[in-house]
Length: 436
Image 1 (cartoon, one colour):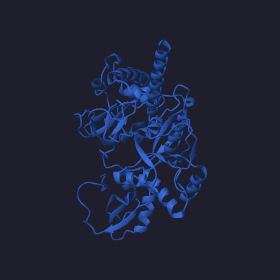
Image 2 (cartoon, rainbow, N blue to C red):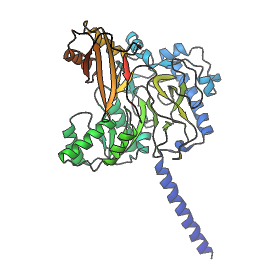
Image 3 (cartoon, rainbow, N blue to C red):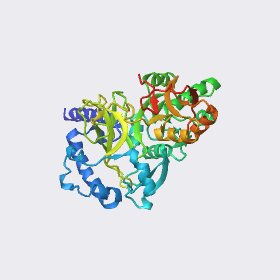
């Protein structure tokens, strides 16, 4: 009887172990399922360390946090009393104090790359270490999207100037995945590579994934190996997600920036976006640092807890979102947000690139015959479209379009309209897209 009892106990333990392994495989690490109180305690301790390091090593934070007493930073309310750093302030600051405006806090030997994002803005990317193999933390989002060790990743984010390509590649390496550095463009060559190399996971914008899959069908080039995808840098409306699934690829989206790395990501539950474990996110009233009531839409302000090279403390992104109540049905216990809900200012994202009112002003400045201009951004067949409407009878639409592409690094149509016909609402950029 004793032997039978032992066998039964061993069998029961084995079953339990299998369940534990299966559940553990669902999550990138145990931190994702921590009790909220445990997470908050760890985050406050990390926050104190980040502030102490920034005050010591960063000229910018040394100045704006000079009156901050670490002993008083014991809650999120205390964090909310600290100054906000706005993304819109970075370009002039970096010009005045190159290369990073004094925000950097690392030695050159600790930096892997310098990058240039539209603005232009410059970012420092930490060199991966054994302690921190994924400094920008997108591995967590890739894991949630189904990426596993050994999967070949077809990385269609740009490798040129901007960080998205390298950022995603580093996160894939942290999981244990080889990467095909596809970048953007060269659609037919990319399709040849997909057919030959058989990647399982796609990383890039959802619109380019759609182009690849549809072009593959048109040309008879197989994309059947692609099963999972992590997409970002532009909106993913339900209709586009459904189209991609019908074409064979189940995608989840991430939300992050070049300055911050990963901020939030979707899980298989598809109920909002779960915050990364190494950030504190506040939703504040746009233009201020004051947190809004739970559930109210406001500006996303992020503090990163895991980047000693380029610390970001209360960084106002200019993006809008709102906190969702409760926790995700997937079992991850961190706070959820609704995802990207537009911009607090007129800056908008087109095909993964920011376009600012200042850039439109630069285009107009190149053409004295243009009295007024308004950029309208819409979506046609789930692809972003830019139309620059200009008042000025003598304007040459083709020449203005050349300037638009040169300044914004994006193609757009130009329409000459009658003087006085553009709305008098102060808008230089009108985002006409809907995300339903």
